[in-house]
Image 1 (spheres, rainbow, N blue to C red):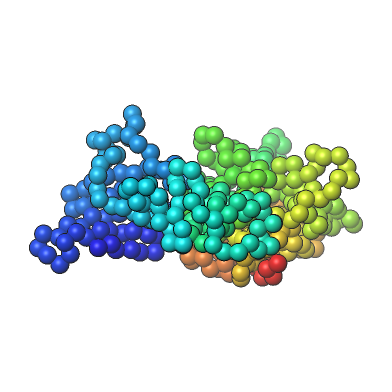
Image 2 (image 1 turned 120 degrees about the vertical axis):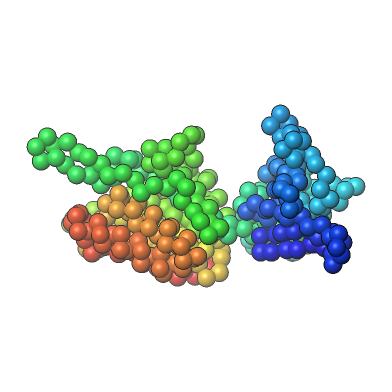
Length: 372
């Protein structure tokens, strides 16, 4: 017998109801793929997979002593789908899937819709979850777009560390910059948080996670929450800043589409990117004036979280980062209550306003959007 939970396979029971019944427990990853099988005595086997579900064999670091290659009798493999031992195909319900190729062996049973033409990845009716297997899953083999991104929070930090808030020594004139709020290790309640940006901003050692346009647009489609922290692009008239775009890499996201600023002036705009994330946050100056109108919304019940920067249209970027961090922490603690998270972010801005006049009176707002 098999025991399933919300995350996938939880346990297998051999000879249930008898004195000699054997219970094995499965430890799944965020996709529901069983990665470790254990029993009352400890680990029985371990399994690692390539992105599209092909199981990795024993290597120098994946040895039999660690449980790799051990036969455990569990047929549920990639995303808890049963794998046929003879053909190696995974049974997704509506059709079979070949993990070695990252493709289904038959076409998507659902008819072609207009969505297929919005994203070229959807043109391939044999493809798997728009080629985003690290965060999306196909529950029944009939969802070319895929489900997923649940409890995945992607944070884009588009500013330099020396743009954070600072104190100036009255005698020496030397600036002392505030530390970042600490993005490393943020998570809990099943949520995973992935910060993108330079190491000195994220505070995470190792190779930096590139905060580029392609990464940003993938997150819009494959995360539950997308948080952008940085500078709005716009103009200041009579001392009031008004935002006209946000900037990722060489791309300006505007209300009319995406303009590649590396092109020659006057070139055509690319279409607005699709956004299916449940919550999209813009922690930028004067974000509320645009209300997230830079994207094509394809989900249901989506909201945008934006900063109302008050009469001058400006909020310090260090304060925006702290507010974003407070939002993410509260969102995780409340298990997805966006209003509680926005209240926590507003409280962080209010605290900063006691020290920085520019932030005084600024707030965070939650606004619903209409799916396109």
